[in-house]
Amino acid sequence: MTGTDGDGAQVSTGTTAEAGADTAAIPELVIISGMSGAGRSTAAKCLEDLGWFVVDNLPPALIPTMVDLGARSQGNVARIAVVVDVRGRRFFDNLRESLAALEAKSVKRRVIFLEASDEALVRRFESVRRPHPLQGSGRIVDGIAAERDLLRELRGDADLVIDTSSLNVHELRAKLDAQFAGEEEPELRATVMSFGYKYGLPVDADLVVDCRFLPNPHWVPELRPFTGVNEEVANYVFNQPGAKEFLDRYAELLQLIATGYRREGKRYVTIAVGCTGGKHRSVAMSEKLATRLAAEGVETVVVHRDMGRE
Image 1 (cartoon, rainbow, N blue to C red):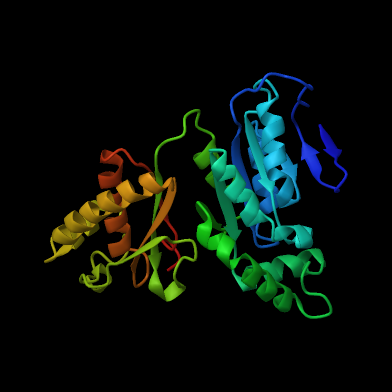
Image 2 (tube, rainbow, N blue to C red):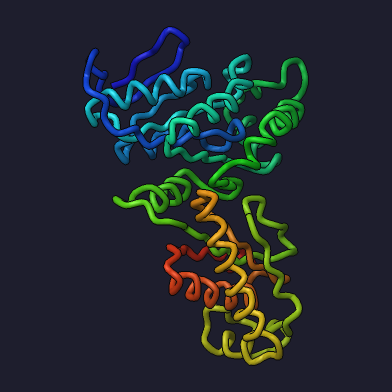
């Protein structure tokens, strides 16, 4: 059921807490933010379908109050997702204070940041013929630039950054389903993404690995048509000097990093593995690296961003 509070916030699904109810467990909280046009509404609907209590455009100063209400709902509101964006201009500066208040209450909270390239955002705004909320009398690109500047610090603090530039609605929902559909929250989730440098760095990468120091199977005629998931290509890559040693040492480094991430409460990491075209070396390395992470107890998803583009 959807309603509206006094500040114009739209509230989707959920049960109203009864006055005087006994305090229950503090709800789990997800804050959805990011660039306008990057898919915040789709993310909110996905979490709502997964049973989350979703509040759209809630002023950040009211987030702790929302969590307190959930705690008094006798378990009826155990998971809350709040969409925070630049529509609440005068309230956005309060977000950092609200996050600090939540941390003081030991609230389990995560921040999802939805990102997209300028080109993708301009194309989306032009397709719906709507102005950017921050463009004023300027152009769409001016509004996008102003929003990026406003959200830069929040993006840096986000637990999960998703680049939707090349994703359709169904692919974005699939990504969120993979992160939130499970009954139990794992300690750490990793996305290992192969990519081609000639197509640009993934903007949502936390760590970047460069495999271009290895000989390129592209120049082996019998291997050129295949990809790094092919056994012959993978064998060629890992029979090269330094390949196995690189995998071993980087896997050891990731164990150290993963321990630090867990200690700091970071639950998501995207590891981008690149080669020239994203077809051979990076694909083979990504597959092996993901296998190593999974063996260490890290829930791992493999994505080959540019495989098939050639």
